[in-house]
Amino acid sequence: HIGPEGHNVGYLRPETAQGIFLNFRRLLEYNAGKVPFGCAQVGNAFRNEIAPRGGLVRVREFQQAEIEWFVHPDDKSHAKFGEVGAHVLTLYPKDLQLTTGKTVAMTARDAVDQKIIANESLAYYLTRTAAFVELLGIDMKRVRFRQHLDTEMAHYACDCWDLEIQLSTGWVECAGHADRSCYDLQVHAAKSKVEMVGTRKFDAPRAVDVLDVKLNKGKIGKSFKSDMALVNKGLDALVADEAAALAFEAQLASTGEAVLAVDGKSFAFTRDMWSVKKVTKMMSEEKFVPSVIEPSFGVGRILTAVFEHTFYAREGDEKRGVMAFPALIAPIKVAVLPLSNAKEFNPVVADLERQLRAAGIQSKSDTSGVAIGRKYARADELGTPFGVTIDFETLQDHAVTVRERDSCAQIRVPLTKVVAHLKDVVEGRASWATLTKDYPVLDTKKE
Picture 1 (cartoon, one colour):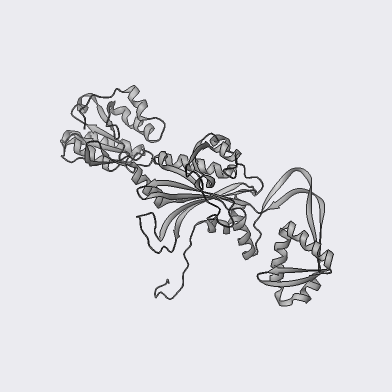
Picture 2 (cartoon, rainbow, N blue to C red):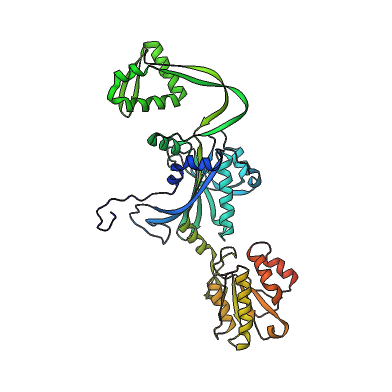
């Protein structure tokens, strides 16, 4: 119940996807009427969890990120699949779940060719998801894509795969990938009475077999009167299903009567009310209800996996915890660490902070008087990948010591170049290994 006095009934969405489906016609217009196209959305969703638990793993309100990729139902290829087809995925297909219980590693291309994954679009998003979580620092040895069993597959889905990540509590679903077929748009169109279709233009007019339906609306209206809404619903469904329509016609042709069943009610049609035949027409385009490929991510669960997979303790010192965030996602990229709180270091610290800020690199300074080892430990606990130490030699040679968090290796870099080098590494254009080729690793005591 919502409102100032709690007397109004409110409804909370169970997923973000439905807002995209409702806006399908507008989104199609934004894309100049072309299919395939996609739309992404991030927002809160709500579930009636009886027993919330596991931190961010099972909660009543959670953040969800979803993509709806609209494709032709008969052509679910993907223009960029060639870029990812060689990517190796760890798959847990439904047949292996029921037999060996073991996963299998294979390329996305092989999985599609062997019909393990239903189509290219679905396989494309599986590979993109795998690359995404690897960038986040997830241990790929503890990642798999599990296919839904037939008994758990949604009634409208063609194929579903869950991204599962192994946590301390076991394998946890962190993202779902589903081929939802045409179900969502068909249901919204039926309820809203608004057509939700795409158009595919042919290179040249082609002969297409279509159903030519003839209705005696006057006769039908007089016969069913107040039930016309139900009858029209049944007729729309019948015309959309070619096999059912032809079977209905065959029944009328043989007996002169056929029964139309709609929502538990039956309506008797006679020969003079309805007829259908298959005809060939020259068409320059076709209308179709798009299928939907949906990757859906649970942001809280992925964050939980990042925290678990990136945390470790220094060897030989369990009290020294480290968050090994990749530089790409670390909240603080660089720690500026003067060797002591001597006043001589202040101008250098201030100038370095200014340069890092101008370069768009998030940094944090520790100007306390504790030992440098303690400053390193503080930065490690925050997941800061790089530390820049300003010492008394800096005042003489205008160079600083750059320390890499996970290896604890240190190099000496000129002040004039350090920010540019760090920016390249943080943004993925370079790596720590490339830096150590230009600047030798210092011989330092083990931390």
